[in-house]
Image (cartoon, rainbow, N blue to C red; front, side, top):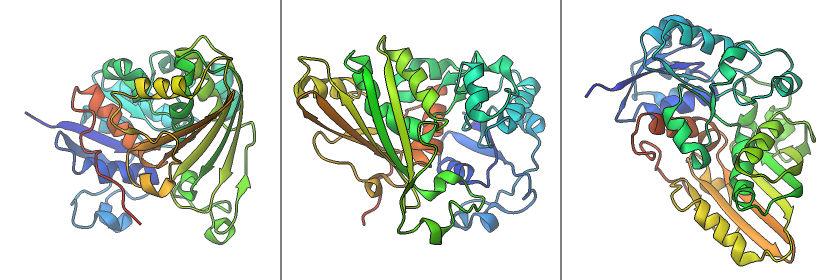
Length: 347
């Protein structure tokens, strides 16, 4: 059987390079194009030396419509704010049978006013927003399998939702929910920035975009979808002195009569068939344990009416490229775990 032909837009960034690292060894996939706006014609390994010896591919010119015509699936690792939306729109117009997974935030939010508020402008392809499917496999697996356009969740949103959605689904999450989350420097992307500069980030912690991070509305949107409960979310992200990882701590108050046994049942029932969510019970996850893997580790503690849930994952894998491949597997009826089951390293 012929392999599925995949094109990657924005293949030289951190998300794109992780897609290449995973998909080069996927048994059902042929990478037909790995595009870059600045590196066309250059061998992949010259920009991404970790791929030396793994492929002879060169970067393709950035031509979304042309790439779409030569592929069955397009994965966009382009920036949000219209760049990704415009390219995806061009690609789908060029190939009506194309299926797309978008790693940006351009197709996650259904409310146009929220998109404009959090992403700073009008949407470049509003006609596609209605049909996009939110790509969190553990909760929307059936919709993803049928989708033409999947909006990959954000890394903070993935970690937060995996932590709190089992409570929402069980009808025991309401009121004020507080989430503090740390991220590694790769979350800022491959282009050097002052905030990501190593001497300023190492041995340092700081908060940013307090109560205003763009992943907040997609978190609230997903909570509303799985539950009649409403929450008042306080979300504060932090810049942590690590390269990769998301470490999110969620605090919630429980309704009267809800105890630790019911909390554990909610997590174990929700994730009984979720191969990439590992439940640690009362133990704390560690970011280094999930680094470079597609696993998310969850731990929780209950004391009286207080519940604390901790989630750890790799921002570039389960929080981005790995989750995109998980969605790709679901869209084609393959084993969800294909090409994604490698463990992390220790130390």
